[in-house]
Structure formats: C-alpha cells, structure tokens
Image 1: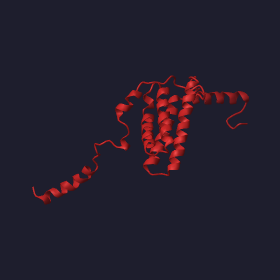
Image 2: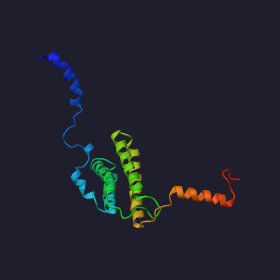
Image 3: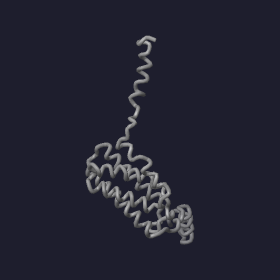
Image 4: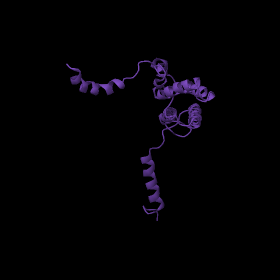
Length: 175
C-alpha cells in the first residue's frame, strides 16, 4: 500500500497515539494501590489518624516537596475512607450521618487537589488544607463521643408540624 493511501489512516490514529499515558508512575497517579489496601476493613478512627498524620506533614512544609507527597497520600486515603469499618451510623453530637461527614472530607480533599493542579494561589490551598484538618479532627472528636439515634425523618417532622398547626388552630394561611 502506498504512503499516500495510508495517510488518512495515520491521521486518524495519530490522536489516539498521543493520548496514551505513560506507564511510569507519576505524582498525579498517587500512591500505589497496595499501599492503601490496608484501609479496607480497618476501623474508621485508625484511617482518620493516618489521614491526619499526612495532613500535618503537608502543612508542616507548606505543601512543598515532601509535604506535597504527604498531601497526595492524604487525598488517596480520603478516597478510601468509605471502605473502612464504621463504629456506628449516626453521630451523637449532631445526629449527622458518619458517611455524610466522610463525603464532605473527601470533597474538601478533592477541592485542594484541584487547586494544586490548576496552580491556584498556594495560600488558598493551604487555607483549605487547614480547614480539612479541622474537619478530620472534628470527626475524630465526634466519633469519640459515640453513636446516636437516627434523626427523625423529614417527612415525619413535617407531618407532625401539620398536626400541631391544626391543634393550635392555625390553618394553612397561619390565621
């Protein structure tokens, strides 16, 4: 086949070849999965302790050099927190779901990661990193207080409010 005939095929395949990722691990890929396998099934408070240590290391250096590596590990740990063993489902301190608090922590870590990838001002990333550490410490403290009862579902609360309004003589218009 002549080179001119192959040219359209080569032009079609060229974008695919340029999209191929390097096989060498990079900082963007995070730590190897084997390093995080130990999170699966461990108690949540232990995983939060590991996360906190990485956050402290990242803050200590202002996200420079080893601190950046520590944040990469922290972000990877935050991604795996839902795989840990929860001591209970609801927090006593604020009747909030443990899973929801973990998702908030994950979201904060992802935001910091995004700031670092887009070369946002370092001060913004550091402020968010301090906020993330406070969230982790807050969850650890709330876990230490023990579990609580599931909050009353909103539908039930609203149904009760309607009943109270009728008893007190207020109608839908508040008269």
